[in-house]
Image (tube, rainbow, N blue to C red; front, side, top):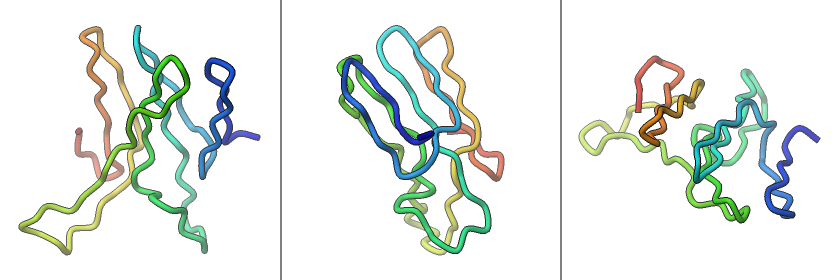
Length: 99
């Protein structure tokens, strides 16, 4: 299946297909595909980026949270990832904002 990733003998199963994988010397970053116009909302669909340690443990899942001053703000999913030489991960949201 396209939603599984094996890391250090562990099989990680994600709620959606894997769209992109990036690595640096310490972590693996996984961005899940977004299913547009799907009648079923995947849990945390807009939180679609994960950092995974070398031993296969999920370190974090990105949190897309509306700003406190604008609770009606609609969060958009991540559509691009870049890992630079300084071990930074830069993500672009669907509406163009970098985080």
